[in-house]
Image (cartoon, rainbow over the protein chains, first blue to last red):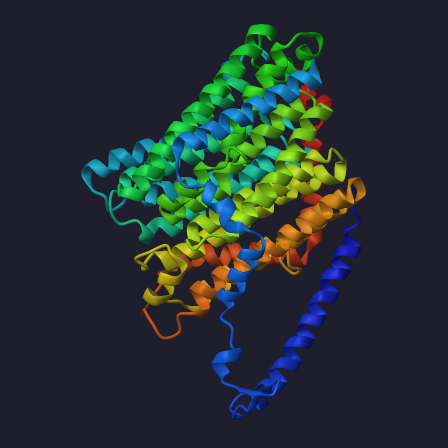
Length: 104
Length: 484
């Protein structure tokens, strides 16, 4: 046997249990939360409007993209066929150098 | 007798008949490939118990003995992948029933050819025959990518054609070099003869073959065609290319590396390094996309990276984990592309922010995409978790740093998946027209969701499958079956 599936099964069941409990709590609390009027948002001595504290999820992902410098990687994939072909040839050359060096 | 191999003939007949029937009328064109795919599922399902319980079988074409004649080999790996392939083929064809309304004869004919090519690659025991089936797969794919004949799809088709042609040239040159030094193209026979052949030629041939197959598999730095091709192709074709097409490349790589060359350490190291690079670069590229199909395309590059990294570890657990991730990714990516297809069916753009303004989604569309994203990121209760867990454990045993990289990549996977989910499915409550999906589009989504959940909740099935498939990469067993 390559791996004991029982431990994995127990982990999955435990996760399912936590998920079910979380869902039950959410369903129970949801009625109380929805429909209530939002209170005043007071942070750091300032009154904030809801728009000031609601961050769009897409903006959140944009910040991750900036942190990981994704744009730089994406800009290399500009659709230039000759560049893609060059990558292929370089890739093949790397394979060849490593294999000739390692196998012969 | 390998009944599963006759599925190749069934799909070839379907490609021919589809064109023939269309001369009279296009009305019954889709029924032929759908019926053919059901027959293919049946033929493969008949072969499965024979191989799983009594071992691998070999069949010779036209009764020419091995290694002279072409060997057809059915083992646990090829039959498992063939079964998933035929099931996905059926679901993709069913999904296309209402999705494709114009030029349907060309579409179904090319799609049938593509499935025939993939199944041929899975069953063949002959490396030149593998090249021929790769050509069948590739030529049909070029046509399917350019199917819409608009600017985007034509550009994608031409790029894919040029890059694919360079790759197949490398593959053919590598096969020719092997034949030149060993005098055979039978994979089992090559495996026995190559160790006694010295010199530089086998290494150069392997490099050429690996480079050729790497493009088909979409591994870094041969991955650049993927985003354009998947964006230009109709969504069911993207599902077939990602779910089935590139897996044929992964499978071929495994056969060549493990069977023909007996997995030298340096080759496994190459798979490991390029796998890690694909995993990370694919995930970063996917995160940076605003286009839904391009995002899913780069995500495939990343997941193929996981597979090669796991196999490159060179351990039994790593190989099993990689093989299981092939199966899981086939199902997950088909689900994601088909659920994206339901949205793109009525949307005028593939840009995530623009889709939200034109289409109002239904719960089935929303949940199918969400489950696909969660499975892709390796969240428990979904099938992706089982294979990714095995990859984490296998990599931790060999090099804990790889586990960290794999975990970080999974986090990025979740980030781009949820970004797309939010942009397409949660931002469109007010705008757009509601998509009314026909039953032919709902059934494939439901079947794939069931598979994603069942394989995730009962990990024993996946682990058993992985263990059975790993046995197929044992050289002595393979040569024993083929050469007797």
